[in-house]
Image (cartoon, rainbow, N blue to C red; front, side, top):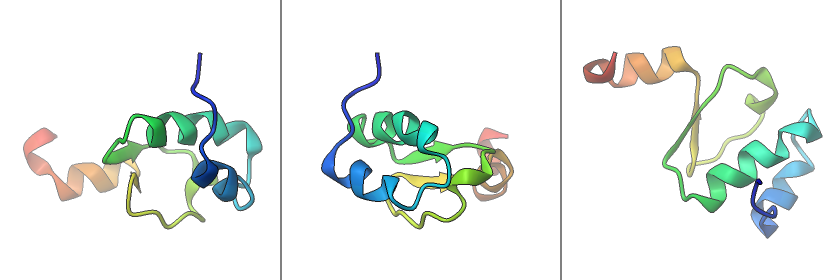
Length: 67
């Protein structure tokens, strides 16, 4: 079960293109994740610093030690 969306996630939901993605974002925020890896372009409009939203390619380019 996904955590209840935080106030931050609820505010961000207003700019999420797909409201069905809110549970993914809420889970990342609740877990205090540093990075959210996704290829979902619905997250492209968000400019968060925590979690930092990266595509798998962006993560691999930034952290080649994990590739």
